[in-house]
Image 1: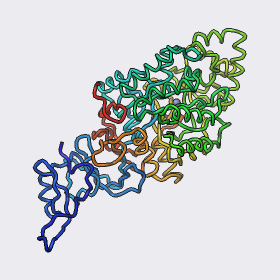
Image 2 (image 1 turned 90 degrees about the vertical axis):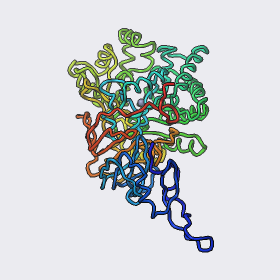
Image 3 (image 1 turned 180 degrees about the vertical axis):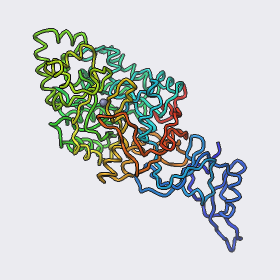
Image 4 (image 1 turned 135 degrees about the vertical axis):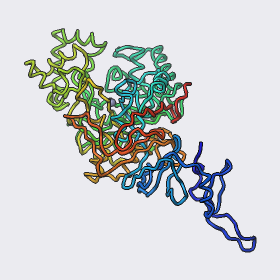
Length: 564
Ligand SMILES: [Zn+2]
């Protein structure tokens, strides 16, 4: 593969080319030159001649302001790409770097492609494969299998993406809830020895096939039935593989009923990683519910204390104040769901239990800020875009009864408006361990209302916190979306704008950058991501999606899945 100069060598060759004799040496500046199949330091004066030997790069992003992902100030730099690699970052004209195609990016910011650390992108579906909602935010890689939901059939998932093509790079976790459900269905008890062995076997299978670690959704069922020790045991299996990560939707996150305790929940997540030997990431991290407004610093202090004693613990977040989950988790207490949906409906039908369910649902709705704050984002058109209160009013019943009626026909996707506090969010955005995520799901054509986070999380963070409020610098924020995540993931070839790295690149126009998606009208692509390259291929070019499916399935460590 033609390259401009070898990755890892300094941009200047050594001053050392000697023209004079031993008595009167003349050391003159040199440049690297690739000719006759190898690299030489040649006198600067010979670079032009050398450039004739040098094959042009495939493309050059010329005249932009580059942020390399390390968090430093922007520098003026051209970026050249050949094949799937970045082959040059610097002053192209000065060293004679040319390209087949040159794109003028004067006035624009060139960054590494963004890494979405917690995603529900539906890459395995026809409507989600191209990942346009994500690409338009500048995202080039997404983490899936999160919230405890990831299948242990990792190789099948990765190879399926490779065969069908995907718009962004993707990597996966094995999910604790998936594993538990597979072995124990919806049993609300501790596993027997053989059951824990079977669960461990599934985690090991996923790790062998390239998973990044174990994800949990301890807020959700059946994960919520697990004691801490069970999750530690399964993480120990993941920890047999270097770099394993514990990705958690922690137990209280979502505002559990009865409250588990915001700080207790964070302490549990840290303990799991610390005892098992995995890194920990708290996903879509925040202090949730009105009772936790203003308390983000307390949770952050626990994380920072753990980091200080050497635990690799971090977080990821987006900057919306609404969450999206499901009606059952938000309105039905865990005990009432034990044994699964049939058992739940039996409890709805029993006069003794339904009374307790309804009373507790009312208490849960208080934590959520009322039935007015629950906005459906569901496939069912009669629910989509309406609040639980609207639906209850139409049916002339109390909200708990309306929730039960809906749940008889299956669970429903719902947003909880205002569950996060904006001040908490701003405090957390300033932590140097905080990465960025969408937590978003491309909704497909049948779901007109969904959470706008799938379309605007990354652009909104820059728009609101950098450009409008001036709370964060652009270089700090870009780092939270790139290098910080790549380091945590153990990637050595993505996440930075560096020669030799894979060419995942985002080009931003700060003048027009905007998250367009709103709660009322969420299906709007972000603006201002002028170009997005995935593995050296334009996925967005001049603001338009190319529909290229240039993403790759990534195994633990960052390598592309090779079928094994
Ligand atoms: Zn989650």
